[in-house]
Length: 379
Picture (cartoon, rainbow, N blue to C red):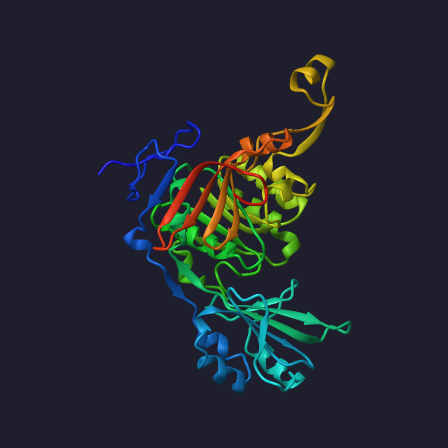
C-alpha cells in the first residue's frame, strides 16, 4: 500500500505507511479512524501504588468504583488523607482520622530515594511520589500521583509525526502531557525505527529504577542527577549517543531553551513540553520565548509604519522557532495545533492565526477541523 502525506500549508513531509482516513483531500474537517494498534489501553499497576498507603486507605480504594479515575492521593501530617479523581474539581476525604508521622515514614520506606526535586518513584512503575518538607528537612506531606501508561493518544497527532519536525506541547498540569510523550517515544522508536533518547529528569517518563518501563518501547533513557543539570544531559545525549529524536519534559529555564535550540540546529527532532497553557504564555515568557523564535522590538521607518498601519515600534520574531509545531492541550481529548512560525507572526501583528482543532467525537474517533480562526481563548 502506498504511503500517505497530509500537507500543512504546502509543506512537504516524508512518506510513511498510511493511517486509515475517511475524508476527501479538499475537506477542512477530517475524521481519523483509530488504528488497530492504537486501541485505548491503560496500564496503571495500581496494586504497587496502593501498597505504600496505610492499610485502611488501601482497602477503601481497592473497592472504589472510581479507582480507574484516581489521579492522586494527598497525605499531609495532621490532616485527613484526600483522594482526587479525574474530571472532578475537588478532592474527597478517605477517612476522618488524621495522617500520622508514622504513616508518612512507612510510605517513605516503600518508595525510592527522594531527589533534589523532592520527587521519588516506585521501581518498575510510572507512579510519582512528591514530598513536602518542613524547615528542618523532615517530610510532613506526600503527593502520591498515579502514573498510567496509556496507549491510544498517539492518533491525535500521528500525521504530524510524519513530518519529522519538532513538536512542543503546552498545557496545564495534569492534562496528560507526559503520558503523550511516553507514547510518542514508543511509536517513534518501535514503528518509525528512530533512535530515540529520553531526558528523564524526574524518572516520570520512563519510571523509577535503572530499567525503564516498557511503555517507552525501544527508546533509550538518560537519567538526570539534578534538575539543574537537565540542559547539560540534553547536550550530552546529542554528542555521545547519536539520537535522531530527543524527548524532554518540563522545559523551564533559559539554559534548557538554549540547549533545545542547539539540538535543533544539529538536525535532531525534538519533542518537549513547557510550562504554560497557551502559545501566548510562551510568547510573553522571556525565559522560554526562544522556543518559538524569540521576541524583539523593531523600529520601523515612517513609510513602512504607514504601509503596515502600525506604530513605529513593533514586536517581531527574531529567529526561526526551535519547534515547528506547538500544540495546546486544552483537555486530554481537545487540542489546538499551531504551525509555530505562522501563528507567532500573526499574533504579534494583532491578528488571529489559522489553526487546527483536534478532538475526539462521541465514538472516540479523532476529528481534525482545519483552518479555524484562533482567538487565544477558545475556538
